[in-house]
Amino acid sequence: MPFAKLGLSEPIVNGVERAGYQEPTPIQQRAIPPILEGRDIIATAQTGTGKTAAFVLPVLERIARTLKDKDANAKPKGPRCLVLAPTRELALQVEESVRTYGRFLRVRSAVLYGGVAIGPQVQALHAQPDVVIATPGRLLDHLGRGNVRFSRLEVLVLDEADRMLDMGFLPDIRRILSELPARRQNLLFSATMARGVEALARSFMRDPVRISIGVQATPAEGVSQSLYPVAGHLKTELLARLLEITPHKSVLIFTRTKRGAERVARALAKKGFPAVALHGDKTQSQRERALQGFREQKHRILVATDVAARGLDIRDISHVINYDVPESFDAYVHRVGRTARANARGEALTLVAMDEEDLVRDIERRLKRSLPRVGVPDFEYSAPAPPRYGSRSRGSREGQGRSWGRGRSRRRSRGSRSGARQ
Image (cartoon, rainbow, N blue to C red; front, top):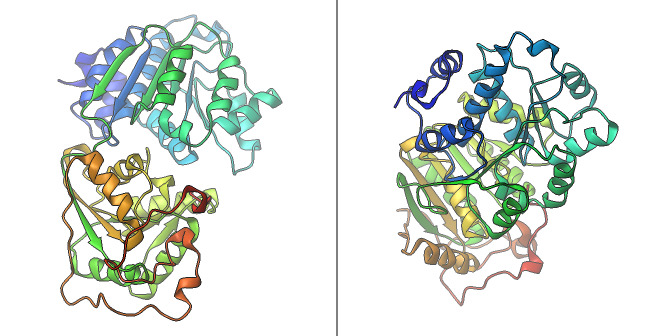
């Protein structure tokens, strides 16, 4: 089915085709028509299925239809669409999609996020954008300063709603909702339909159309998954060995903490595998350079915390490696979902220390199958831990000096988890 048959006008179809897309994905086929009809939408689909375009395209179509009106310039100014996103990276990605797909339209957009100077954002708001994309905290800052008003708002989009709730944005979202016109179209997109997301949707949506694509909370079919048991102090050595023997195009490595991401990136660089780290302590310009360099293959290895696991448009990742086993099944699915996007193939490798076995069993239970455990030939699994290794921080799993497979595995208590997630 071509995009034109979904009810999109020629300028938008041309923008999509110029971006290299010819056929809509299933989520786009099912979401775009009811959105164009003005219905509220609750859409859940796996990462990498095209959710961003599923709301950006019909929003642009709605704006484009008004732009044809000769009296459009005489109408009150102000944003017609507000998109809330959990992270600045995702907000920037959405704004880029608005510009890319709307390149043949006279549509203005502004993106608002924290960690940067507020002045340029104020100027962008003064230019009367049609679409505002924002993280909740920075948007509340602008609302408090009187920099933006939404009296003309027609469409609200909550993107990656489950992620926003995971990050504690529910109070901010409720405050923002209180500032918006009651009569509006509401679009909620999420990778999973957690209980909190369902409750939030019921609080403000009107008879929403529910769309679910694929089996939720499971890795894509194209992902080959395997486990590599290893003592905690040998993880970096095994990681380097895997990079050496595994043909790879681009590799996304996940650690649990910011400190862990920096340590692993530095260690890989010393071993001849140039890598860049991405986490919440990086400045916005550093994060943008890291992502852009990875997308452009200037560096083929990105070491990241879960800030990179959701929503970011990073294509053609051949391998995902979990240096630390994620602490929830949903986190595992979202990490693994960074590869095998858009029906491609990919590999997900997870390094498993002894006291991470309980976490792995939880993942396998939710997957309803066991994952293969793989060993690397000629790797020295019995190498002893260096002196004082066991005294390091458990927050990055560095204190696991015991050999994997001896003794009884233990799950860390919640109280010992590091608060530095991103």
